[in-house]
Image 1 (cartoon, rainbow, N blue to C red):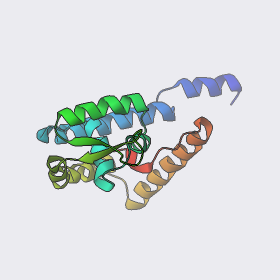
Image 2 (image 1 turned 60 degrees about the vertical axis):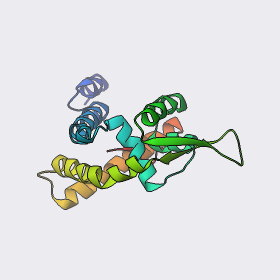
Image 3 (image 1 turned 180 degrees about the vertical axis):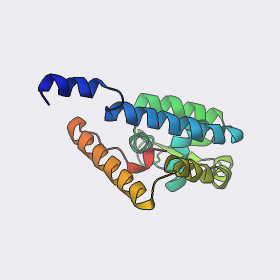
Image 4 (image 1 turned 90 degrees about the vertical axis):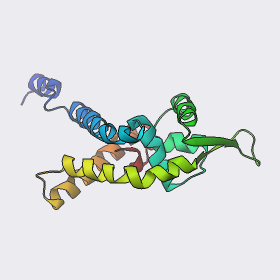
Length: 162
């Protein structure tokens, strides 16, 4: 193919990895939120809860990094999580600049109710794939993330997605 045709091909949404992953992410988020909203949890809140269920009490900065969001977006999201009664923020006794984020008892009780939903949505997404194809897909997506992270000098934790 010549360069002009290559460029045209990359403009085709059905060929564009960026477009396809964005649509896949949007569909993941909507399918998950359809389930988590039964318990009053949005897909945006889910991203923070899932990180905190793995490690409660991390700093606000670390949480922002693991979820893959900028600090101002995280601050705004945490205000909503506090208002919903899902987290508390506490100033570090060692360093007053650091805020640690802790789950409330209500948020801890949601884990066994919400965790099965992510498995269900992942199973839906890989329907018709063999286990090996699903493994390869995950491997290729991780490689894609690594490749792009090198370019933008950002390290996004693998647990920040649906």
